[in-house]
Length: 294
Image (cartoon, rainbow, N blue to C red; front, side, top):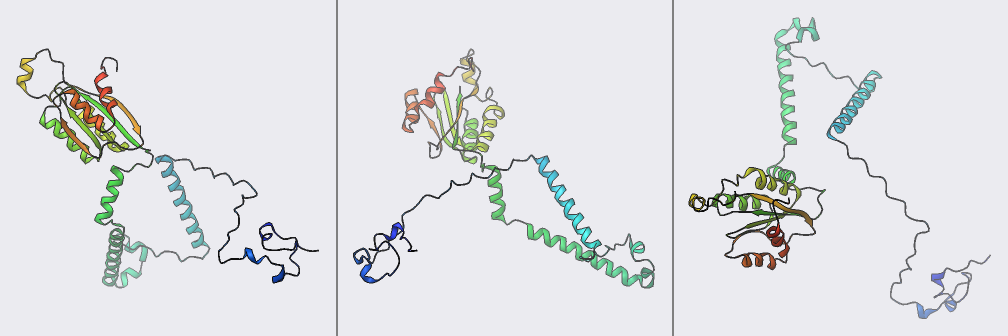
C-alpha cells in the first residue's frame, strides 16, 4: 500500500506517495539554503492541571512532623543493627561509667584506660567544635541572613504606602527620628512640614512599614514633642500634638526615589512637593482628614 505524503512535504513532492522518489519528481524550486521550520501545532490533548499546592503548616505542626521523621529514622537504624546489616555503635566510655562498661578490663591497666577515655572524649569534643565551625556562616552570609529577616517578605505584592498627619513636627529630635528611621528601614517618601500641618508619607515593604508604624503611633510621645515652651505659653488653647494614620494601602511601585524632609512656608508649596511626584491626593487626604470621624 503506498504511503501518503505528509502535508509539510506536499510543497516538495510532485507525486502523492513516497514511492520511487527521484530528483525528477522533486520540486527543486522549493529547496533553498534556508532552514524551514515546521508549523507549530497544538498538542492533541489539553495540558494537565497544575498539582495541588501543599498546605502551609504551623510551627507546631512542623515540629511534630520533624519529631516523627527522626523517630522513624532511628527505628529503621535500630532494626538494621538488629538484623546485622549495620555495625552497632561502640559504647561511649566516660570516667563516670568506666567500671560499668569495661568491667574487669578496667582493673588490669587503669592508667592506660583512663588515657584512652580522656583521648576519646577530647576527640568527640573536637569533632563537635569542627562541625559547628563548618556550619558557621561567613560575615557576608550573616549580613544577608539578617537583611532577609528584616526586609524580605515573599508574601508582599507591590509596595505599601502609609500617610500620616502630624499637628507639629518642628521638634528637631522628633524630626531626626522620623527621618533616620525611614532611611534605616529602607523606606522612600517625604516628610512635608508647614506651620499648620505636617504630612509624612512612607513607601516600602510590609516588615519595614510595620516597624515604622510602631515608631509613629506608639514609641514617639507626640504630646511632649513640640517646638518649644514659649509657643505653649503664647497659645494655651492650642490642641495637643498628635500623629494619626490617615491612609494605608498598596501600590504597584514606589513613587519617591528616596526619603526626604521638606520645610515649606505655605500649604501651596507643600502640596507642590506631592504634585511634582504625581501624588497630590496624599496631601488632600491628610488635609481633609478629621480625627473625630476616624
